[in-house]
Image (cartoon, rainbow, N blue to C red; front, side):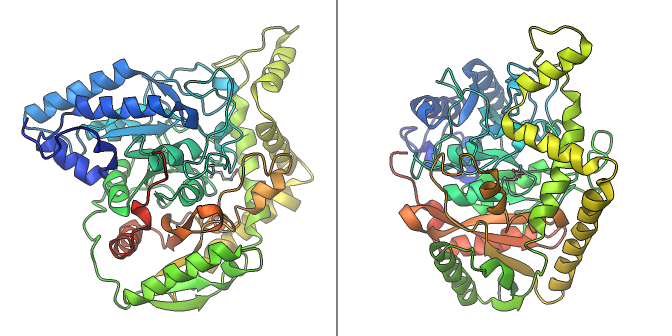
Length: 502
Ligand code: GLN
């Protein structure tokens, strides 16, 4: 093979776009690429990001990719490695959803998103750590031992391993930031793609609710859950998202009847005249000064690129916290009722009768945060409280969605912080779940409305920790969002900064 790459040493610094080209032009093989990344994952097990790897499976996929390249008929992402959040079920790797309840579980099928990416020729490196059933903001709720550990161990943030990577897609964000994989999948129910992307200095996008199939994504809150890519650049996210989206009418009845789209087509469109809505509620007292400074500078950069800042209001921003923490647990309590020790997953060893088996299985199999949400969910759905909590929350959810539509009359896109602070220290929110919930304030409104949202690297704050800028678009505006993100990345270099030691 003739090559501009003489060693495979710098493969992990290439973007998905560059890697795909090198592979197609046979400057490097899929097997060499897979070996390179497997070696890196092994060298950095202390980060705790992977929960399952299987070199035999990965290399077999890579060999098949090389054959397709040799036959002259490669897929768009042929041979490019990817790792999946362990909330997507996979037949060749474990599918735990970060829970003891699914320890050692193997799915008989691949999630639609996983299958679609494999269909484009992507090679799976393994599965990535996440909060149990995607409930959390720090990845500290995972009950699964990462590769290289015999006990559950928190994922480190590559920028400072004494800090959290964010959650629930913390393993995905950490692995991409540490260049253990060029790209990863994530899921976002209330911010789980955007917040860890922000905390780890990478780029992530959650598409419009319904654009990507939820089939094979272990369900948390079905009216909110969405899959999306986490990568280093907006361009890479565009490549991935193009492969992930599309209707799945037979398997996900909430998937939208909107054809798959090439999200790379308008990445370079000019931002001249773009109206960026800046919600005043996103710049309230709770926003840390370092985050505010970075976000302000990013907004300034957009002005230089030809955009105009428009002050807007999203008056029910604060209400999004109680609304989300009623609706999401309500749906979770229903979704998690399937884990009863009968059909699959964990079953208590000792019990007296069927009812006792259910009780012990669920008491032993679920972690504290999951139990807390099941109880909240069962409570708000119960007779006598349904009207007072659940129904009220649904009404306000609609108002929040309407607020966005009003705002989009004045602007084309909304920008602001992703989270009120940079990534905090491991254990800092220890016994205070409310501290985690409150930190979701800027991602929840867009989630409740079902809107597409992104996080892009926009600088550094306290402790030299990354700060993300959040971009929220109107329904189906993913191509525009990615264009807005890409232009920013052409003008700045935050997204190419690298954590030391990786
Ligand atoms: N932090 C939020 C929660 O714990 C969001 C999680 C997510 O988006 N999966 O519910």
